[in-house]
Length: 239
Ligand SMILES: [Zn+2]
Image (cartoon, rainbow, N blue to C red; front, top):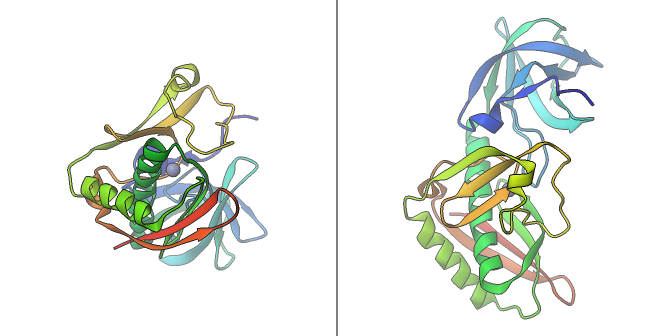
């Protein structure tokens, strides 16, 4: 597989809300590949971005963004965009920023849980109104989870920087716990993108995050579920 056609601007600057781009290809009138994009494609537990692609005053609503065969495809609400056209990209920033805050919050809670109980996260899904985690833990107590969220909230009230950078694969794999998801293996690439929450968590991750834990705000527990012998599920949300 060659280099991807599209430059993923969100991986470098998650605060980029608009950008210029060129249309590389259009399939079935509605599936648009660009030379660069600010739109995050659905994946890694983080939902896709919405927004619009503007061509000379005409808006094309972006209704879905996915990665197919390694390429980022933007599904727009009506046909008309043509290969080679220059366009302006505008993110639905409210949606994205909430997902960024949620994603960073999820890393902090997962890391505290993992450090405190040894639990491995077996699944996670961010949504606009909640954050969901699955993890394996024998003993399970709502009050204990409340305490972990309390700890997390104390961190969200302080200045803790969040950074992201590429590391050569070999070097990245030496970081203890760099792969947090049980059974998840990093893609076979020469370098891995690391998201580091200073003093809290360091892991390979392709999502978008806030630059400081203060931006998260606070989180509250919604509900907990038993999904089997040691499978637990927790829902929480940004307050
Ligand atoms: Zn993540």
